[in-house]
Amino acid sequence: MIRTMQNPKPWLLVLTVGLGTLLNPLNSSMISVALTRLQHEFALSVATASWLISAFYLASAAGQPVFGKLGDMFGPKRLFLAGLIIVALSSSLAPFAPNFGWLLVCRILQAIGSSTLFPSGMSMVRTQITVGQGKALATLSVFASISAAFGPSIGGFLIESWDWPSIFLVNFPFIIVSFVLALFVLPGQKTGKIELKRIDFVGILLFVIGIVTLILFLLSIENGPRWWALPVAVVAFIAFYFYERRRHDPFIDLKTLKSNANLSFVYLQFICINLVFYCYFFGLPLFLQQVRGYSEGKTGLIMLAMAGCAVFIAPMTGRWIDRKGSKPPLVAGGTAILLGTLLLLTLHNSTPLWWLIIIMIVLGISNGFNNISMQTALYDYVTPEETGSASGLFQTSRYLGSISSSTILGLLFSSHLDIAHFHLVVWVCSIGSLVVLALSLRLPKKQKRPVPQTNH
Image 1 (cartoon, one colour):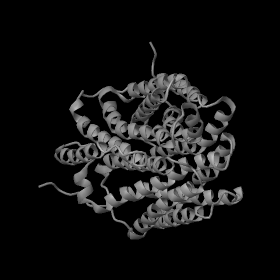
Image 2 (tube, rainbow, N blue to C red):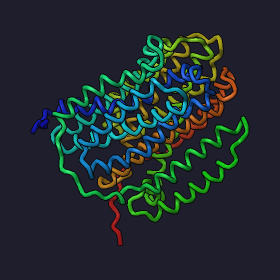
Image 3 (spheres, rainbow, N blue to C red):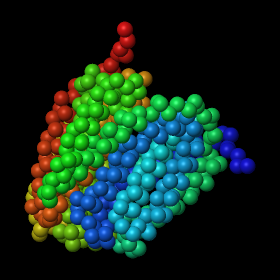
Image 4 (cartoon, one colour):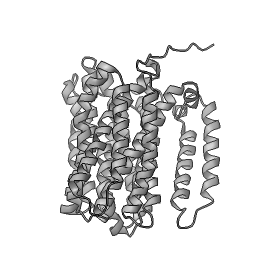
């Protein structure tokens, strides 16, 4: 019989959880450098290959709220171990994919398994670490940030050395170490009452149907629109709206969004930030490999200029927020993302690499400002009791921005990828950047936390 440590050291608990939770951002970012190779391997268009991104984020968006509630019912340790097993299964099957459909299912399983790890891991950290909890949670965010930042570089090195299956096999060292530690370190907590009715399966299903059919329609516009998909999407979203309004514990709390305009603007701003950032995060590797002719390894190193820069800016942003609040760094981030976007319009086929790297650093700086500042701005508009649900919807906003970016890339890069089509993506992102800056400027200098409303 395996015994759990009675009082695990906090750092060991954080390490165990961190090694598991980094799998989601790592696998979501490594694919950016692999898309070109997978296009050639399975004879895909950019639009079809973009489903490897969209499906991952859509499964993550739908999965996290479900698994958070399942963790309360069955115990977070069991769910954490189950998530690692699902990621291991998907990572072992993906390298043998005989076709694109097989690979897409493996990516969805990866997203489901890795989405299980975050809510269950956070639950255990919050209940087991009472002293220095903020430091522990910050450490976990570092795990996620670093794995996402270095994902393209790791992926580029692996693909260049051992081909695309290696980006799935690289998960196993993290899975094995985290699983062994989890067996002994993670606390065996009591299970709760099994109440599956608490999970909004109908709302999630309508949400997924609406998103999938809308993407299917948009990606088919150039080569013959799938007209049937548009009315299905509209009906699904209308049904979703009316169903969520009546549900006591909805997937997306539409009543709160309607009554709290400032909170809704925060979510909108975060969607736009992620739309712009991930258009570049996934679009630039395609441009660098297919237009500029760089190898996967060199592309991964170049991408480090953008993704890695955000990791170094984040600590400075935290101190700035402590002194001045969320607005100044958000304005700086909005200015930087607009500046970087406009500078990308100066790129041409003969533009020197050093200039592109400077632009990517500007975009990385904007991401370093925006991510932490948006999180703190969120908490300015919710009560402590609403923090959990607000944080969940905040993550959903991130996924919606990411899904939107992959759809834009699939639509604009579908026929041909050249500098002109890349500039089209930049023009779309310039609109998103203007929205980000405008919403940053509308924030009050000193935000007050809302007073809890009394239900009559």
